[in-house]
Length: 258
Image (cartoon, rainbow, N blue to C red; front, side, top):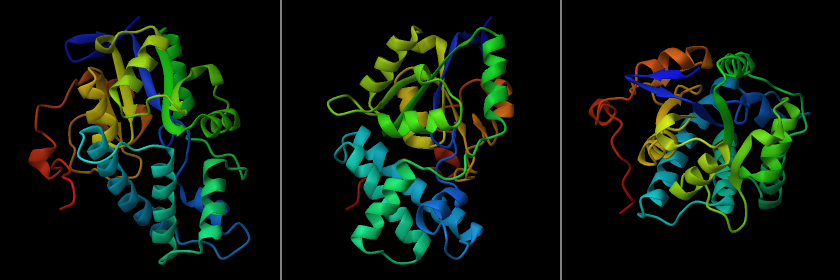
C-alpha cells in the first residue's frame, strides 16, 4: 500500500525525532533538567522562550545550509540549548551550571514523556506497509537514549550527528538516510518541526515535506502544516504548498546578519 501525496504516491516516511516523535523541548523537560527540586517553571514562559529560540535555531541552520553562515554541528546545537536556557531563566547562568543543564537535556533521565499521537501514527503506517525511518540533528547517543525511553526500536534511526558524517539539514544526510531506508526521495515524505531547516531543506533534497508545528511557531504557514500527527495522512494527501506560499504570508527567507 502507499500514501497519497497530491497526485503522487509515497512508499516511505522519514520522521524527525525530537519534538516530532519524542518530546524534547517541553516545559517538563526543562523543569527536570534545570530545577528538578526547585520552583515550578511557568509553562507559558517556557513555551514562549522555546518558540523564540526554535525560530532563531531554524534560521541559523538554514543559513548554514545555504552557505551564508558556517554549517551547524553538535557544538552549535549545544550553544542553541544554552541560549534557550538563558531565555527561560531571563539571564545567562554560570558556565558550569549551563553545561550541566544542557547535558541533562540531551540525555534526560526524568519521567518518560510520550506524544499520544506518535504510536498510533506509526501503527497506521505499519498497517499500510509504508517504510518508516527516524532522523535527527541530535548526537547518536542522545537519540538512541530517547528512543529507548519511549519504546522506539533503535534500528529506525537512520541519521544523527556523528563525527565525520554529514548532519541534517545537509543534503548528504538526507541522501544517506534514504539509502539506508531503501526508498528514493521522490517516493518519500519527511515530517519535521522546523519550517526552513527541516521542511524546506527536505524539499530541496527532493522529498515531500510537511511541518508538524507542535510549538505553534509557524502559524502563518497555511499549507502542509499540522499540529498533530493525527492529521498526517490528510496533510500529505493535500500535497506540496504552492511556491512562495509561506513567504507571501510573512515567513520570509532568513538572511545573514549584517
